[in-house]
Image 1: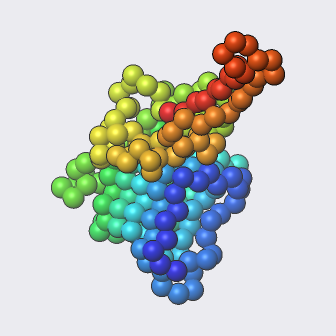
Image 2: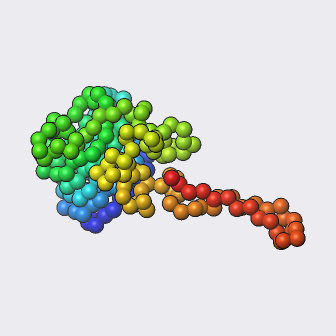
Image 3: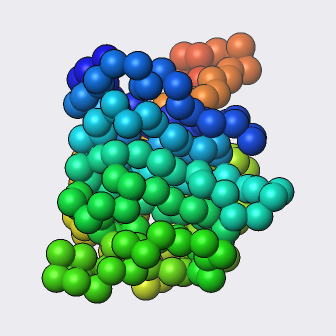
Length: 212
């Protein structure tokens, strides 16, 4: 498998793992961007992920600290790791990739040493601890909408490209995650009419909205 783009998805697999398909033969040019993961992401050593950015990982564990991300990648940035007990393995801890501008839940129970590396290669704060209750909106009627960042906070536009971190960020607006599949264009969701004509014709009411 090569030249694979995985983007704008929500993976609802409570307690599940995305893995396996990358284990047997070399795979390359894989891009994993602007997704919502409610399951672990563990790709085999033969999978070379060119880019893993603007994703959110929200995997609850009932057994304490647990590895939820295990990948080999050339770029891991603008992601949000929502779980305080997450264990993350990127390139088996070898400092040879671009790992920068990521958020994770404050006070993680287990964390790989490279995530706090202060050497020159990682001076751009690869992982920043934050209080998750201060990060997200919590009023959306859509489950995926609750992963949007609150507006008007210090967490806005702090990604490597000066846009929001997480699936709703990224410099290219059309590449961002869209709530419940709504694109960044007006979408008609209701059309109604009384069925009675007046002097100007048949009145029709059209309602549309756009995902923000």
